[in-house]
Image 1 (cartoon, helix red, strand yellow):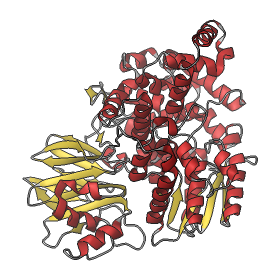
Image 2 (cartoon, one colour; image 1 turned 45 degrees about the vertical axis):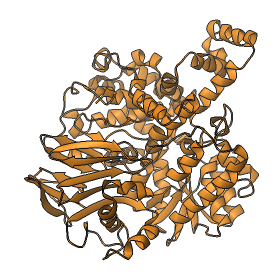
Image 3 (cartoon, one colour; image 1 turned 60 degrees about the vertical axis):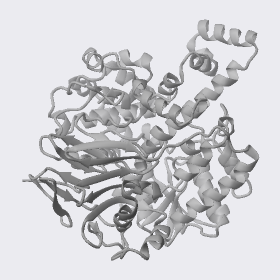
Image 4 (tube, one colour; image 1 turned 30 degrees about the vertical axis):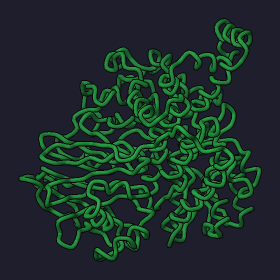
Length: 619
């Protein structure tokens, strides 16, 4: 019998050993098990159940409107504990499968209705918590992380080259695909019903773009009110810390908290080197607000940090800033169980790279014809090293929005694939372009009212980029910290989508709405600070990160895996380690991929499985 790490639900599996606290039953003629995740501190673990034991639920994450929901349900239902999963079973009794519409938070859950023989699955509106599933031969397995599903016997026998190709281009794999053909994932704002051995996904929430938009003058006050409410909901009943960078997102949380007179106990910043400007800006912001500041160095052992990322996610995930953020989360967890993060501000408020690229295209198209023609000639005939931003804008102007999204912020652009991938890898990928997986999202955006390409790009950045950014939630939980992201609130996101696209961001200005709402709440220096990521800094040039690159990406090891061309990998590493060009995100992706392919569960497969198209992309 296989011993399985915690999952949410198993239907039709009888050859696994379940953790303590699991509930066993049947769905039709199949065995069913619900497995609760470890309970947060101060809460009792277990599977939530209603009064007549006909409805049971398990939940990962947190419901931030729990007080409102409990108050409305308490007159008609009995609560035996404090776990949020109890809210689900009683809310389901009143609203049925529509219950996710009433929830506000970051969550994924599985709920079993014995009377109807139905299993309900759902993921939160913005996709802050993932929900993976494997449905085959009338069996179903559900988890909020990939590793438990990878442990199921005989489920996964290979990885998908097209999905890996998409990850190397976009930094993530769009739902419903994953890196493994046998495992799917729900999209943000999606639920699925398992009945009669079949799983039927459906959307229960979608960002929409109304025809009549809010006036720009009215938006700052409305947004400030929504932000204050989102922060207060996540502060309720806890002493919390704050993961503080020098950027606008974290500064917004500090300013709103100060306005509500509920400051964090401490602010934590991960410094990547002695001259880290972001860390200095964070320290100044904390001092201005009167909050104690703790500065943490990045990981000492980058090899262990890389292995921790792969173990938590079951494959490559995130960028080189992820271990740095986790180091700050680990330190915060030593002081209190909850911390806030300003992650997601670009995706929610406008300013992700593709949206700003399109704004540059619009400005270029508004130039007089002679200026446009001169710029096009310059971009066509001048050396690429000279054309710079002008060349990028001219190139973007020739692209459709879906292709622009796939190119503007790509880890590796289309022109790099033949130099990077071996002939066998190119054959396995075929003629797939990474942005083909985005076509379904752009179609969804149009159905949501995004007739303007700027709106469509904003929609896709929110649906695709925000869940990838929220990967830190899982990593923070792995070190004992509950990380809350007040800016990633679906009601705030809907308000932002209700203003004209031009009010969100321009080619040279990010998060214009957020900046306008924060005037008077945060120092002017915070409003003006440029975006910086918590990249490793000088760690690339010395210490364990450099040693990891030199050890992991040797020509012999890269050649032995047969995926990347060793000479191209060596060239990228040389540029990064010498500081000649910023290749950090690319080298980190190569590090993760080669380390992942060398893991026993992955490397045991001599060849990737043949890819098949599912949901608009190969799966």
